[in-house]
Length: 284
Image 1 (cartoon, rainbow, N blue to C red):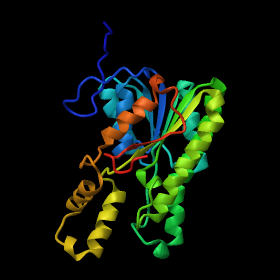
Image 2: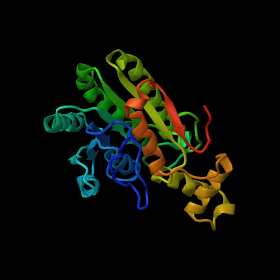
Image 3: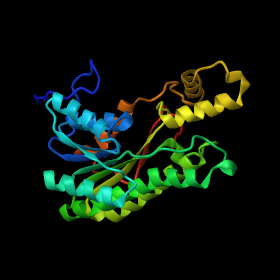
Image 4: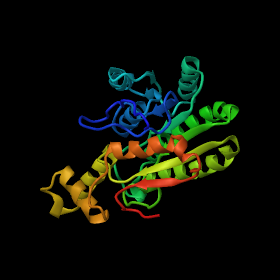
């Protein structure tokens, strides 16, 4: 009978994790200091990976590493602005110096700036910042890691996209454009790196209560008098129920579970895919 090792728990009361064969792999998670990134870092550590948490906020990254180490995991925190080539190159250099390899890269940095707006009213600066934060950051990290992975003839790259990268959403034009770009980049890299046995995939979260969706809820509230007395959480939950067949929002841990699978040996024949975790909101 196969023995199971004790796993780090990402939530109180959570049971043992599956053995996904990523024990002792070196994983880098950008934007890993909070939210979905934190959940991904904790889940990879729970599966036995040594995790480098890179974040603009080093204190937040260090807090996640402290959580990991408190449960017998291993890793380190790195302060990095994922939109700056020199910071990304430094992140990769520090990781390779400490561990010698990078087996798994998770690009989680992304988001919108300037709130929600119609395309006709979107400020150029907000457009540029959203593309930079979401698409450029993913490109820079992929570029920085691809060479060392190719030399070793193995690796896993997982980009966090969004269902907004598959179906346009009113008031989220810049964000949608950036996430569509992440999916195109994912497919291109999957084709370029396949000969090195490197897989590249995207995970597309649906309705996780993030600042982006909070901004959309605020815009809906501002533009619909019927929602004036509703809280942003209530507006979000009503939206989820109306557009998802399962009728429930997604959690950061839901996203982390798929990332852990795609990072594993079990997913060695999956590449170039953009997989939704969205309760059925977007099918295909």
